[in-house]
View (cartoon, rainbow, N blue to C red):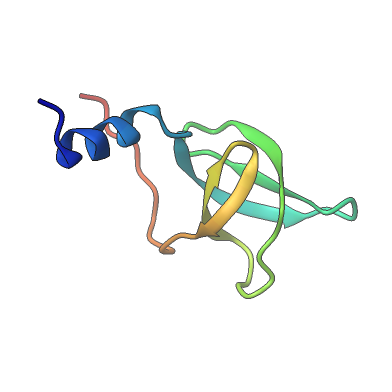
Length: 78
C-alpha cells in the first residue's frame, strides 16, 4: 500500500542534489565563481547581489538557487 508519506520520501531521493558553496566573485558573463567545501573552484549560473563577498549559497543543477547562512563551512570525515 503506497501512502503519501512514501511518495514524499521518494521525492527526496530522486530530486536534483544541492550543495553548499562559497561565492568568491561575480563574472561579466553573468556567471558566479564559487568554491566548494572540498576546495573545488567552478562557475555557476546566476548571482545574488544582496550580499557582500564572500557569502554562502545553495547550488543545484549548475545554478544558484538561494542564499545560505554565512556560517563557517567545515568538513568532517566519518
